[in-house]
Length: 368
Image (cartoon, rainbow, N blue to C red; front, side):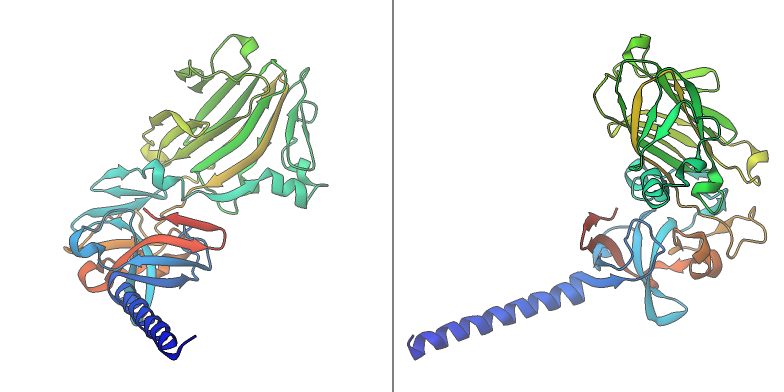
């Protein structure tokens, strides 16, 4: 290779490197910032992952509720932290019963956000694999004859029996958590019987009735004995796998079948229930069915408790200052490091950007 050609290639590489370096400087110091995330306060961001922050978005767009923001710690200018926006400028916020009230109105999280906030509490497959000799003891109070459990965590019902499994709230959570998500895959191996999923939520019995086609009735959801909605377009045909999810959160119930929302209803909690520790008990019943249930999980919602600044009197609302925001983690135990302990944050002075994406070896997702 001639000397002239070598110089030409070297010159190109130098120019290319300079351009890449300038792009890096533009991205890193003006448009975006890439940092490791070592905390464990936002469940939708995996611990020890990498987050990408948009540093300019709030120059032309308003800060919105539920945004995950990157900010300077107002108590330590050398430290930057990541928190979630739950209260906006000028609002009056009240954190009660683990939920967010703005100007006396309950704020419900959108389902697109909620999907990323569920955190695992009870995984039947994991328990069966890790503790095969004791797994059955968790849920066989009434269901010894009607149900069997494989070492892979698959539940099978006995066609000739009727029985109920009780999943104790104390088993799948160290703390009482009212808002939960119950999910599983179900296959009717034979066209027989029906399955009931019952959850006691905010003092109400919510029942999901899943019949086989032989029953001649459609699946439906009911409150106590009152049918709330019948799913006339859905049939649980034998040999086909269906994914079922029951979400109970923010004083509402949602049912998803094969990831499609088929039911949603709000409940208003009675005033005298605010200060009670209400657990959400879960029961799974078989009425002479022949089904297999796999991937049975119970997840819990994040809970915005008043254990920081307002822990002594949870009934006192907090007025957010102009141009300030109420920021929290998604973890009760870390309330000392957010607005629950130190008050609202000046957005213009301290908020430096929005977390838009997380990156980890097996995970990549936009943050909304």
